[in-house]
Length: 494
Image 1 (cartoon, helix red, strand yellow):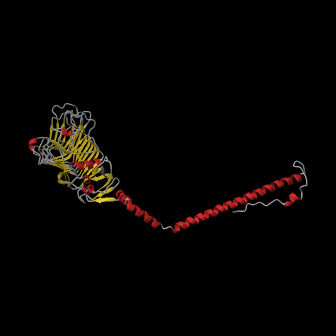
Image 2 (tube, rainbow, N blue to C red):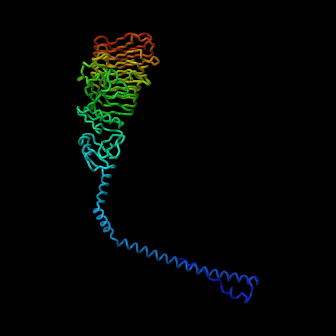
Image 3 (cartoon, rainbow, N blue to C red):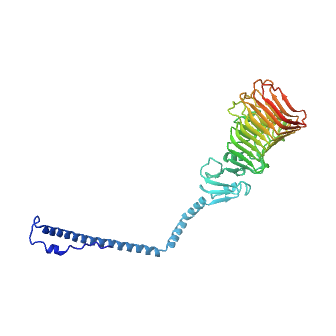
């Protein structure tokens, strides 16, 4: 510690100049100064004494601290910690608490792996907070590999019940495989519910190769048109912002044979932003009882939807239309189908129409093949018909059919104006670069005989070939001057 003592004043100031007697108020200046120095000397003595005692106290505390430091340091240097730990572990083992702690930690932090969902359900190791991986849904490597989190209350999304109040919640991603929800694709099992769960829980649904059986009819609905009611509960129901993607055209959705007059394998009502790719849809025409009648078993039904793309698909053997683009019957329309694109699609052996276009604002049929439509009127490759049936103001606006082939249908394209059409909108149909082969009549343009409204717009046919028609290549019926303009250019008929 630094020396804080102060030297005394020189003694001559006090002894040499101070008189033998004086009072406090008298004396010369020098005598008064001597008295002042005497007081200062007294203060210096008091300060020096205090500083010495303070220094000694601080040094004592420092010594005590060093002693404590050395004691603690020496204690832990010589302490046998492992022995203490071992003693504690022995106590916990004997009491059973160590096993409980280890088990809980493992169950909560280890990701358990099982071959199947059934194996996961049979496990007794899972607790709330556990994670489990299944290598398949029914068996390892069957395509249903998934990750689950175990929770103690039923989740809002897809889950498997484990019992004892526990649930395995499927960890969802944007892209999910239908086999993760239990679809088999074996051509026998009803996979409707499993695929619907995939649609409800993902934005991209992958359908591996296989034949997935779909219950397309609604047993609660009867009659010819009920399948277009918004309450219809048959087939796969689309949601907005969805892609259904097959591994290839061997990814097949097949309707389970029904006795119903109507069904839909896939149905979209008032939804937007839909993509359907690399899927084959098969109806039940080959097994349907012909005595039942009906013509409304559709492969894909699109009603009052927007931004729908159907690409690289096959649709076969439907009891009604391959694709129906229309509106809910007996319902006032609040918007048309908009931006409906059908590209690179083959439709084969539909019973009624390959495609029915009954309500659309901007549609495209491109690079398609439609063939063998012959059973039920209109039996057309494409039927363009704003339908009535209590519907107000359907319209056909900006529909383009390009670079497509119509082969061996009763009619290739049938365009029919009815009283239901919205007279405030132009009727616009354009057909270009198409081939029509071996139809009874390839192209029909007809207005209803009682249709007297003035309809503006056009039907344009450009650069098309008509080969080997049974009756006529092109037929125009009841088309009046107040109906849309018919404009044909560069037509080849053989």
